[in-house]
Amino acid sequence: MQFKRKDLLFSLCGLNCSLCPSFVQGTCPGCRAGSHCAAVCPFAPCSVEHGNVSYCFECGEYPCRHYDGVDKHDSLITHKNQLKDIEKAKQIGIDKYHEEQTVKKQILDELLDNYDVGNKEIFLCLAVNLLDIEDLKDILNKADLSTKDMDLADKYYYIKQLFNDCGEKRGIELKLRRDGYYG
Ligand code: SF4
Ligand code: SF4
Image 1 (cartoon, protein in one colour):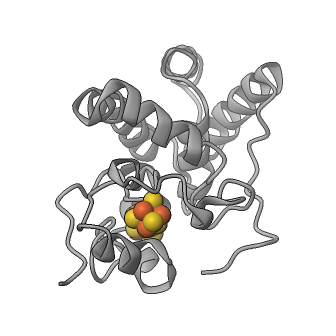
Image 2: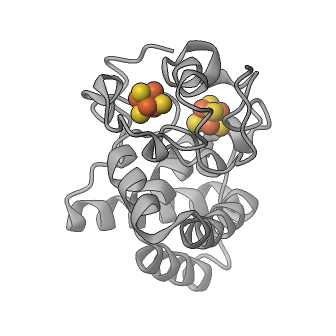
């Protein structure tokens, strides 16, 4: 049996593919055969052996040993909320989870269209992944009002500061932890 998935927005192992820098750059199609992650991760072949589950939370062995420390290191996308997001999708159901993810994706698209001074996807994806929807909306509204006359670079650094201030207030560091990156 081959590794096959239909959901290209939320991965087998709990990553928000639709909010991933590789996905928005168009270099990875999302979690399926041929994706960046599938080439190196232990979850994909394992899911095939476990009934071809679409999400690991559907597997009777979840959380298995592959999840030990999985949220301690980042790749290009943050893994900080990986276990939390899996749990959330399991609790509220994948359709409801997709609804929230879609709102975040719309916010991310607005940021990429109007605030990305160039190659800033990694930070913008990180902020959208980790901050909650209400905070993101407030920041976007404030920045839209305050940056009307600014050039793109100033707009980006203005909104970046708002994200960092919000992260600090919430105890969320907006920085990737790449020390243990395996892929
Ligand atoms: S690199 Fe991984 S997390 Fe990012 S879109 Fe591809 S499969 Fe999803
Ligand atoms: S939960 Fe663990 S054992 Fe089950 S499919 Fe996922 S990686 Fe494999």
